Length: 327
Image (tube, rainbow, N blue to C red; front, side):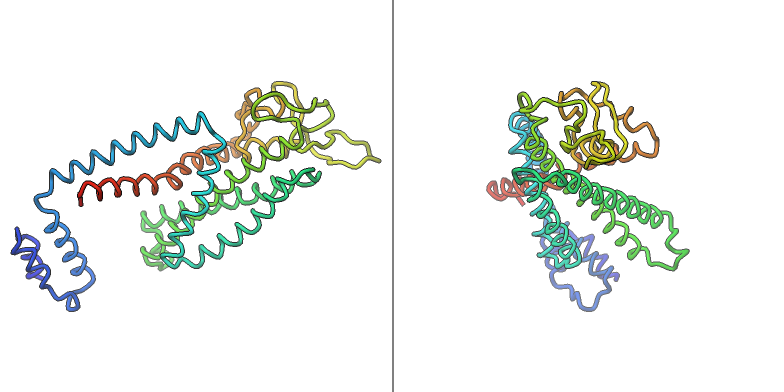
């Protein structure tokens, strides 16, 4: 161990040669990590100016990329959302296969299969009457599961940091891996389902005809029809329809409570499905236990950028560094 310490404080080419001559097989894992750490420092010693240039390239790329993404999202939101959704769906798959995360791959395949079926139903014309509720039920289920999974993962991480895992005789590394895995599952599938739900909500609302993303709706909304699902709000005993609670927005348009909640939370819409007036979410979710769902949805929207675009930006930075000969 003393030899390793002496090598670490060595300088110049002699220290680097001594590091290369160290026999790693005779060292403990901690000593091996120290040798690798010392090798990295020896390799990059004297490159301070180059490292500063790389940091400036990283900051400049992040700023420019953020500006371009914001402009793209404002000018062409549909293409931006589609590309972001595709990256959110495919990028983790690459790392999963590369790192042999087979459990994640199995869950990803099951989620993709059911979501593909639901999305197929949502994009058919004419739209089957039961499809909107099927779509919102599926994505609301995934939303709740991801929310619960993320909370459990966060609690497991915090318990490990406070040492509470020792009460159950669980190793810190095992408890932390468990917590981080659950946190990742919850956040990733939470982001993915909200993007798919938003796309399905747009397709279904446009097909029903009471909503248009740009321009006027193709149908006039009757007071007795829910603009989200297109079904009758109030039905007689002898009539076929959906019997449930209703909700009136500040614009006086009435919807099934389940439909408007799915539209706002799952479909990420904060406007009336018919007149596009701003929806007061605080009034809609007056119960304090329901408000965390809104904040969780906002967190997922922020994480979308981190998961979908951060790997692309980092790859772009590495490409620039490679072209400029920076290491």
